[in-house]
Length: 117
Length: 114
Image (tube, rainbow over all chains, first blue to last red; front, side):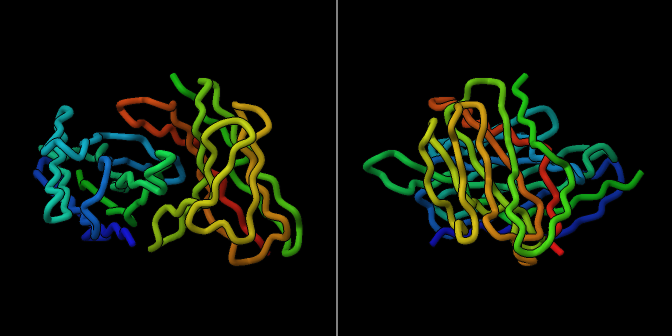
């Protein structure tokens, strides 16, 4: 059974620091891995998606990596800003029935990031 | 921009009541999902639908049912609400074949069952 874990659960850093958030999954049979951002009381916004054949994706100050064989992904945030404060979640897409092509997403519990001004 | 709306931001219901949570998307997406989010447990999939009148159970369907009579609307039903269904409920939609695999989430409904 696929399980997705994110450590740490919470993180506080001073503004300007570079930081890394971790995501691990137990089964390497994934289609892709996504990183999301969630602001308090809001829904999720997709940040980056890495296909299973890819190693990393970049968007602005964000860089996500994927190592399928070890079941790990990292989200690197450069030069953090107070506006980056949010909860960051990772999710893997996995097959439910390979015959019918149905799938689902399994989410981690998130890392709550606070960037101090 | 894709917009996913949920009928209520906050709901308070009593044990045993029938509860309807509505989700509407305006971009003709085939796929729609209902999740609940609890502290320490993350998002867990309740039900999903690949198209109109189609539905599939997710990981925690017990105590819930769904309805997808129109493409834009996906309803989550709590037949007899219980206190352990107090949670944040999130709806999402996705376009079939979208290579970016983007799920668009609604703002969530925080349900309290007393």
